[in-house]
Image 1 (cartoon, rainbow, N blue to C red):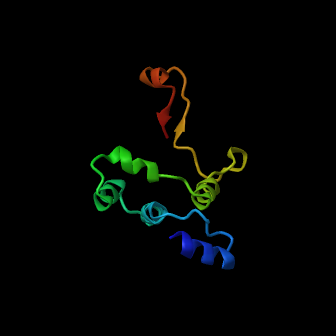
Image 2 (spheres, rainbow, N blue to C red; image 1 turned 90 degrees about the vertical axis):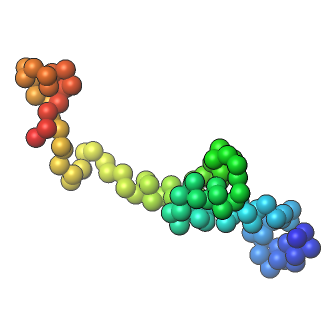
Image 3 (cartoon, rainbow, N blue to C red; image 1 turned 45 degrees about the vertical axis):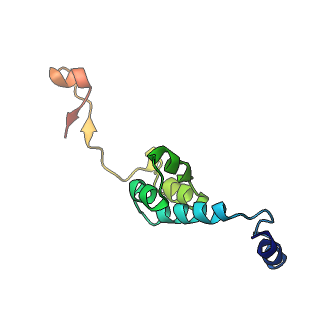
Length: 101
């Protein structure tokens, strides 16, 4: 692997010089997660006895972070109508501080 990594690194600096086979396994597991495959299924595919072992593959990629942040909306310019509003002195709603509109 290191011989091929050295040759590939000459063409592309992104290829690590210390490449090892586990990186391929890790990359495949991460790609399965990005493709929406369930973590339990991935655990079975990788042959892990414990789901905790597979949880190490749940790295959040920069792309996933950007997609998540893109879904956020500034409350000051929110176009989504509120589902709940505060209603005073209505008994049980005071306990929970809201009622359904």
